[in-house]
Amino acid sequence: GAVVSQHPSRVICKSGTSVKIECRSLDFQATTMFWYRQFPKQSLMLMATSNEGSKATYEQGVEKDKFLINHASLTLSTLTVTSAHPEDSSFYICSAFPLSSGDSYEQYFGPGTRLTVT
Amino acid sequence: GQQLNQSPQSMFIQEGEDVSMNCTSSSIFNTWLWYKQDPGEGPVLLIALYKAGELTSNGRLTAQFGITRKDSFLNISASIPSDVGIYFCAGQLWEYGNKLVFGAGTILRVKS
Image 1 (cartoon, rainbow over the protein chains, first blue to last red):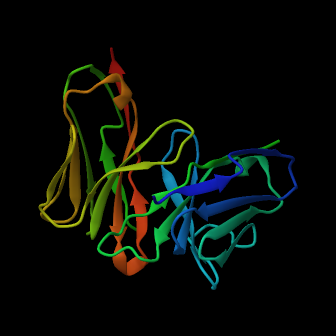
Image 2: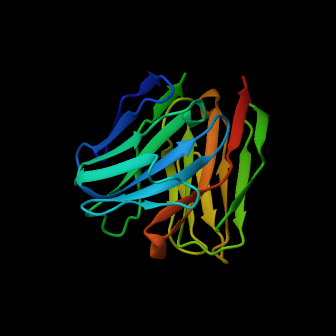
């Protein structure tokens, strides 16, 4: 149980175009999902917290108009990178926090999406 | 903001050796977690620590949550080639929406 999927796993796009990345919790519901970005040989940096039915909360320095987040259901959050530029090339990872977690505070991570902007 | 200092940055050890890595912070965390990430994949939870002073094992892995709630260590005993990867510590703050703050990672390379 507790599987999180991401789609696509890899995407290459041209500079100036937009790319949508999906994060799905397959066997549980999640009111909260998190989006992280990881550059090569670096750690995961939290970009934003996605809450079902409400606006996402962005971390300092993350442009909300560039990284659009939609959490339309309890099992799906999407991250859209708008007007992508080469510097947006990175590994994007989502995690999901179960609705019914009991005493556990564990987040479940997706496998990541490698974005390359040419 | 909260920061985690993770060390060492990388390790190159002989198969069969024990490994130790640690994380410290100037901030208190409610939960400490240790993850392993293989190339091109998302992190996988190894051990979660919820109480100050807690010592928890998972197979050859042992981790402890520091008494001050500001540090944690992870030990791997009798390392094997599949232990290769990047290990991250992470601190979690319940009052900040369960956000995770990650350490910089420890790259583990094992000589067979």
